[in-house]
Length: 184
Image 1: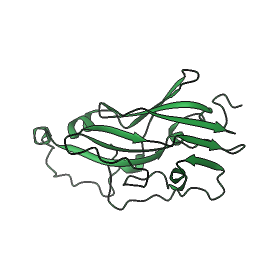
Image 2: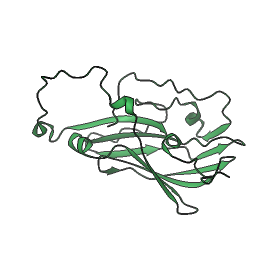
Image 3: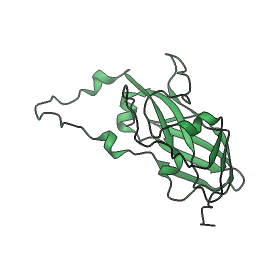
Image 4: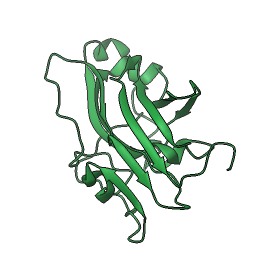
């Protein structure tokens, strides 16, 4: 489960020599991944809303030989029981020019580990106490990090799913010197 932690930051600073332009440009200044509010974060939709909402750059222009980078910034508010029982955060990226779809789970193993294991005498969780309880947080990730192959330049439609919720689709144009999915 992905959850926000106050004050959490990332050691993954963007490389200074990275030859990639983002529109809007603040996507290029992000340290990814992070799980707190960032300049790219969507606004919280409100207390009565539940689901996943995402934003991404409209355009990513790659320099010659640059690996693709696709920042996705989002916010979720989902029922705790669905988060506990459901699949982890996942990406679905459709290349609208070809119809090809790639999917990937967003799993950060270190985020799901206890720093200190809970004591053995902790009472078992009573699921009835969690009915009606929601969990929310921010996520700011580089979608490319979770994909087996580099994204191919073209027009992309990106959706994120989590705990049974499906985000709004966002459109991204990836142009320039990136590698294709088949390596050329």
